[in-house]
Length: 265
Image (cartoon, rainbow, N blue to C red):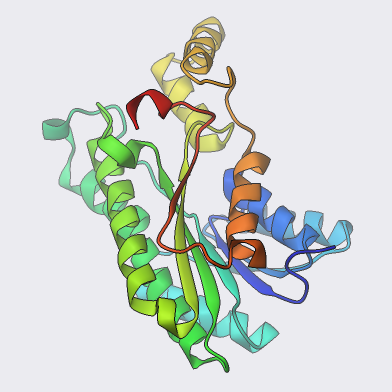
């Protein structure tokens, strides 16, 4: 039985990595999917993939750091499908990676915060307003955070700060809107084979294939399950949180990291 039959699901950052996997998973579970991202070609490619498998989806080009574009995204979602039932706020940027805290530029700080923190807030702002306007008011929001936001990460201070902020936004909104039928949770992602991690490893390895392999093996050795995760595994967490199976779960930070942070929490 499909868990999201006739639901309308929005996925930002939906054209690659966890977002792409989530868009496919939502569609497989019966949802009508609205996929948002900055990259047009990859976005339309994911929509084609979903339709080829019998699912329903549309793509809306969106920069989540721009309020008018986020507002337009929600408007187009409702214009097309009539409502919004669940949202995965997953879009992210990683400007200034591998810099110490005092070495980031203001531009790198502003870009990372604008997408990774302000972008999540903007999406929540317009998603919640739409969900409250529905009769009855109801909906589920999942915000993608990171294990880096649980305690910080050397050479990744701004990204960590933004992802920590996402957890605070999530918990605050969960308390504010629970009685109005809206659940809000966070997916705290560990290491997944997605473009952001692949870029980070390649950058750290200087592009050397042998060094890339060594870093991947070292990373996997830190994880209790002994491997880096597949984006589809993170997507399943998002689907569960959006389903009725999680009807009593809100304000929760669900860590999906293969046990990477288990020794520290």
